Each structure stands twice: as C-alpha cells, then as structure tokens.
Image (cartoon, rainbow, N blue to C red):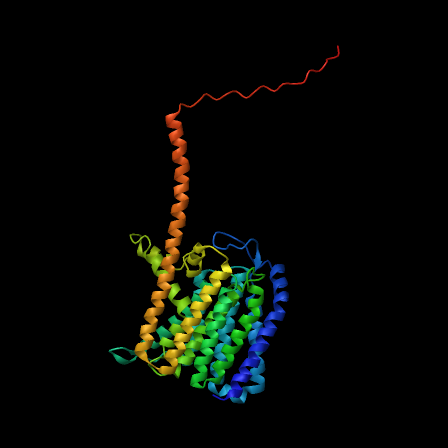
Length: 404
C-alpha cells in the first residue's frame, strides 16, 4: 500500500481524536441537562451519577475524520469501498447510534435494540458484505452458500453486543476498541484496502480522544450510543476486510483480533444457559441475555487493587491476541490460526476460572467470619445461663427547692 495513504490515515485519526476530545465537555453538559446519567447500582460501582452520552462525542469525531478524508482524498481511498457500500454503512451505523442514544436517554428494550441491530446488519449483507468461504483443517475450502448471510448477520450483531458488554470499567471499551481498530487497520493495509485503513484509523483516534475523559475516574461514559456504534463498526469492517482475504484466514483473523470481547461473551452466555439446567428451556434461553457481573472484567476485580490495573491487564491480553491475528494474516497459515485460537480460548477461560476461584475464596472467608461470630455467640449462650436483664438505673434528679 502507498505510504501516503498511511500518513493520510494518521492525519485523519489525529483530527478525529482532537474533535472528540474538544466536544466531550459540551456533550457532558448536554447529557446532564437531558438527565442522561448512569447511577451507581449493584453492577455499576462508580461513586456517583456519571453522564453516559459520550458516544455522541465519539461519533462526531469519527464523522469529522471520515468527512475530511472523503472530501479531500476520495479519489485515492474511495475506490476500495463502492459508493453504495459506503452509503449503506453510513445509514446502518447511524441507525445503531440512534437506537443507542435513545437507550441512553429514555431506555429501549433489548428486543427492540436487537431487531434494529439485525436490520442494520442486513443492510450491509444485502450489498455483498458477507463471509463466502471457509477453510477448515481436514475439510479444505468450504463454500458457505446459503449459510453465508446468517453467519455474517450473526457476526456483526454478535460483535456489536460483545463490545457493548465489555464496557464495564472506566476506559476499558474505548481502549480495547482502539487496540482492535489498529490491528484491523494493519490487516486492511496488508490487503491494500485504503478505505478500511482510514475508517479504522479515525475509529482508533476518536477512542483515544475520548479515553482522556473516560479514564479512571471517568468524567463521562460512552453509553450504548458509543459502545453499540463502535461494536457495529468493528463487526462490519472486520467482515469487509475478510471478503478479499484468502479463505485460510478469512474468519480466523477477525476472531483472533476480537477474541477477548467475543469469546468472553460466548462463555458468559453459556454459563447463564447452563445455570439451573433443570429450568424451562425458554427461561434459560432468555437468561443468556440478562446483565450480570460474570464478565471477565467483573471476575478479575475480585483480585482487588485499582480497577485501572485490571484494565491494563486486559489491554495487554488484547494486544497479544491482535498480534497473533496479524501473524496469521501475514503467514496465511490455517493450522497456526486454529492453534492460536485454541490458545486464545484457553487463556480467556483460564483467566475467568482464576477470577471465579478468587470470588469463591472471598465468599468463603466472609461466611467463615459470619459463622464464627454466630457460633461464638451461641456457645456463650449455651455454656453460661443468661443473666436477667438489669433494670436501667433510675435517673437521679437534682434536688430543687419547691416554693410554696
């Protein structure tokens, strides 16, 4: 790829980051005025209410970067994305942002959000953004045929919600998206897809501009308007990058790059479904989509320490997985990709188990302390007869001479 495209993408990223950083204070005041606040509860551990409309600042930054790039350099990088493809992407992303903003402001049921996400993904699949072939060890190249569209829809919607669910600690989602966007940028550069390079660059830049205000202690949250929009962009552009990729790495590279949010979400859903396995099947299925504190960042919080340290650990894991994805993209080794995917799954599963074990120890310790107090109280009562309650001493009133 021409080096000038990379320099241009860097400039667009800086512009997106600058715009996002500058408009966050204004967006914060708008969120406060509209009462778009995230109050603390059993799942949200911030000390007070925090504005949650930060996605507006991120989208404005992305729009600024893409707009300037489209106006000044369309002839160079626009050829990699057809005009109708770009219009479909813009319309679908705008719909996802609007439903996320509506949820931040007044609340939207999960079912309605899911249907709109599905329709937005369908707008892209209908113009040709879908997985076509898959290469599996021992089976060779498999033409997905009629399964291509459902698999592509599932991928886009799944990534959208995976990024939404990982937004649970200050700076976590914005930093993770910035890292993954950078890796997808490199992946697109290897394929010569200039449009994807610029779009992923401005996404990373906007996330970094927002991270300055979202780092612990966060002054603003991105909300669903930000997490859903960023997740949709990652799902859509990772899919678009795979269209021109060799069949050996068409799906492996996106899965490896997005491994932390995607695999963690799948494991959480599996745990919710298997919990109370004797319950009705419909109830177990619906429980898969209910919010809880079983995600990776929640479990790692049981180790104690600052939440910023937990975010740093997850950053490091995401960087390693993205590097693994780029190795597979460069080598095109299918078996290596499958082996690294197994390693990635094992690492995430192991980290979750460590968090669960630490949680179990903490609960057991609290229970032991509670039982010890109760046992000591009962033993004392059983060994020593209860003394009759003494009457409270009578209040001695000061002598006052009464006038007659």
